[in-house]
Amino acid sequence: MKQALVDDTEDVSLDFGNEEELAFRKAKIRHPVATFFHLFFRVSAIITYVGCDWFSRSFVGCFVTVLLLLSFDFWSVKNVTGRLMVGLRWWNQIDEDGKSHWIFEARKVSPNTVAATEAEARVFWLGLIICPMIWIVFFFSSLFSLKLKWLALVIAGISLQAANLYGYVLCKMGGESDISKVTASFLSQTVFQTACPRDFQKPGLEGLEIHKY
Image (cartoon, rainbow, N blue to C red):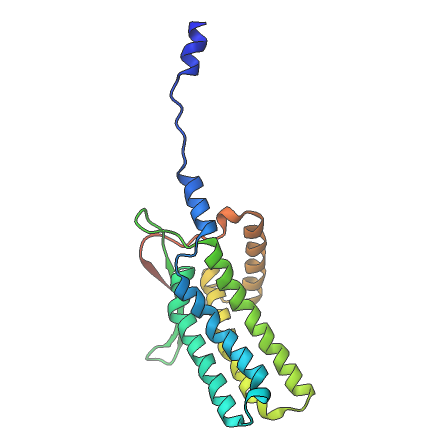
C-alpha cells in the first residue's frame, strides 16, 4: 500500500513546450502586413487585367498599371515577404567573368527566434504557385482569342512570377540546379508535409546563412 502511494505521488515531468509551439505555429500569423502584400499586388494585377475592358478603354493605361503591379509584386516577394513568411531569400548576380551565380539565404532557428507559422507558409506557397498558373491560362486565352496586343503583358506576368517561383523552389530545395529533381523533390516534400504538418516549416539556425551555388 505504501509502495502504491509512493508511486502515485512521484513527480512526473511534462513537456508542454512542443505542444505550445505547435499550437502557436498553427493558429497565428506573425506578419499580417507581409502576408497581405504577398497577395495584394499579384491578385490586384490579375483583377486589373481581367477588368481592363470593363473599367477603362485605354490600353496603355491598363498595360502600365498591370506592369507596375507585377513589378511591385516581384520586388516585394523576392526581398520582403519570402524572408519574413518562410525565412528564405534568393537572388542572382553576375560576377566579373560574366558568369551567373544563384545565391540563397535561409533563416536558421535559434532559441531567440520564432519559426514561421504554418498559416504563413501555406499562404506564401499557394500564392506563389497558383498565380503563375493563372497567367499561363491568360496566355492561352489571349492566343486563341487573337488578342495579340495583350500577349506581351501576359508573358511579362508569367516571367516575373515564374522567376520568383523558380528561385524560391531552388532555395527551399537547397540550390539543386536540375529542375526535374527539384520538381520531384519539392512535390514529394509538399505531400509529406501535408501528411505531417509538424514538419511543415523548418527554416534553419540563427540569423541568415548564405549558400552559393
